[in-house]
Each structure stands twice: as C-alpha cells, then as structure tokens.
Image 1: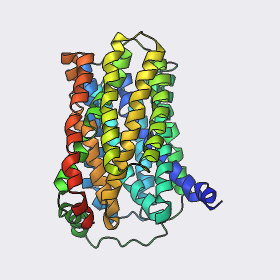
Image 2 (image 1 turned 135 degrees about the horizontal axis):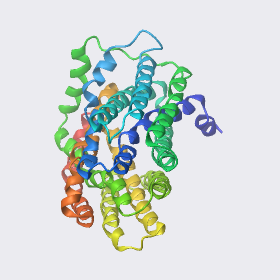
Image 3 (image 1 turned 90 degrees about the vertical axis):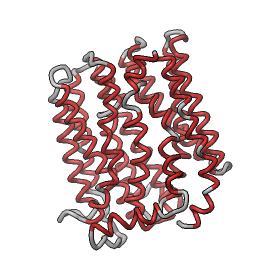
Length: 409
C-alpha cells in the first residue's frame, strides 16, 4: 500500500509531467525536422548535418553552474528558470513553424538551434529540480516516471507529428507542437516548491570549480569519460539516418509514424524495463557488455532491410529489435552514469556526463549523411556496427579502475 501511495503521489505526477516538458522539443529539431527537410527535397548531406543543431545538449554543462549560482526573482530558484525556458521554447517552435526549408534553410536551422538551446537549458534545471523535491528513497521511482514522460512526449513530437504531416502542411504541424508545449508552463506553475535547502554557491568560481575538481581528481576519470563518449557511438550514428533511410526505401510518413516511431518507442520502453530487471541479477559490467553487444548487432538489421520483402512486417521486426536493444543498452548506460555522480554536485556533474553522452548523437553523427551517400545504405549500417567495438573494449580498463574510482566518491 505504501508503494502504491508513492507511485500515485502528487510529486510523482509532477515528475511525469516534467518528463513530458523535457522530451517534447527533442525530435522537433531531430528526426521530425529531418522528415520535413526530406519532404522538401533538401540534399542528404544537409539533412545529416541537422544533428549539429543539438550542440547545446553537448555543451549544457558550460552554463549549468550559472543556473546553480543565480536565480530570477519569481517562482523560486528552479521553477523560475523552468518557466522562462518553457516560454522561450514555445516561442521558438512557433517561429520555426513560420519558416520554410525550401525558401530559407538558414532561418529554419536558426530557429531549430534556439529550440535546442532553450530545451537543453531546461533539462539542466529539471534535473536539479527533480533531485531537490524528491527524497533519496524515491529517486529511482521518480527517474523511471520522468523517463516515461519523456518518451511519451517523443511519441507526440515524433509519431503524432509525422501522422499530422500526412494530413496538413508541415508549418501547421509545428504550430500544433507549439500548442502542445504550452501546458508545460501550467505544469511548472502547479508544481511544488523546492523544499530542501541547498546552499547556493557563493560565487561563480565555486559553482564552476567545485564539481569539476571533484570529478577530475578521481583516478581513471578520463578513461571513464572516453567510455561514456564511445559506448553508444555506433547506435547514435545509425539512429541519425534512420528517418531518411526509411523514407528513401519507399515507406510513407504514416508507415514511419506507426512503425518506426510508435512501435519503436514501445520497443524502447520495453527494452528499458527488461534491461532494468536483468540488471537486478547481473552486475553492471556484464549488463553493459551484453547490452552493448546486442545493441551493436541490432544495427545490422538495417543493412539487411533492403534485401527483405518491402512489407511493414519486415520494417517492424528490424525497428523493434534495434529499439529493444537500444533501450536495454540505455538502461545500463544511464545507471552507470548515475553511479558516477557525487550528490554534492549532482546537477553540474550530471549535465557534464549527459552532455558528453550527446556528442556521438550531435557531432560524430553529423557526417553520416555524406557517409551514407558514399558507402551506400548497407555498408553504412555495417560500419555503424563496427565502430561500436572500441566502446565495448574500453569496459576492460573502466572496470579495472572501478574500485579506485568508487573509493574517491
């Protein structure tokens, strides 16, 4: 009964809604935007470079200390910033809806970058807020609900947006997305105030140096960071070109919405749940190894898709397997990163680690459009499988250092 009360508590509802606030903008500057550009016959190289719009998700740790150090004079230290960024996100999505990739691609990319910047900043504040309103014993449940809210929002900005695009112009689709982001402001207004007193850094030097010094003085810290950078690089490179690949294979946007987005998202959620359950029986090392191998092998399904019958069943099997494996890998990956953070500096350190996690998706994936043009789709996806190997090999030195790293945290 106590567990049921915790699951259905007001704070847990707010955490679920905050996950929605964080997840909605992401695909609007990623796969959904790529689908719009593909429809408008933008060249494949430019579509691949869209991943660079996500740079703020990589660099957000740079201004995370600023958001720790300063607060605006209304709604509290965290909630005030949340409302500011949510208003700016809504305005930027609407601005993007008034643009056209055929007429002015630069303007489209500019608005998309603003969405990414404000969304990444919102993520920093939401992570800190979630940590501060939840007691330690409820953080695991809160994180699970937050991720579910995040994925629900991605279903809205991914599958639902693509479905709408088959019915109405893309500019109207993005107006719908701006309207669906508006409730985020209401969610913040009704959310509880931060109840735990957290000492605000006395100056920017303390806000910046403290968390970085603590992390980088750990033995093996640089090896751990390299592992975080490379563990999902192959998966990220393949995912960056999945949307144009499926569309160029002759599938419709509705097919993409119902199979690649909807079924894929369900498979990711299931994969995350399976991964979490399996991690109760297997240690972190073996979970990362097994899920990482499965994640790499699943990418090969895309290389086989052109040889399979052009049916939704073939697409569904490939998409479901890849997303199931990716969800399992992400479960272990996220758990490992959480184990690295020092509670005294959770906000900035978590921003640093998740920013590093985003580099494969943003920077290393940026030339994938050109790579796919040169290699061809089949060879490209085989290459994505191969580049996953170095991340798996780094598990050897990472776990040799594990005891020494934990001793310093």
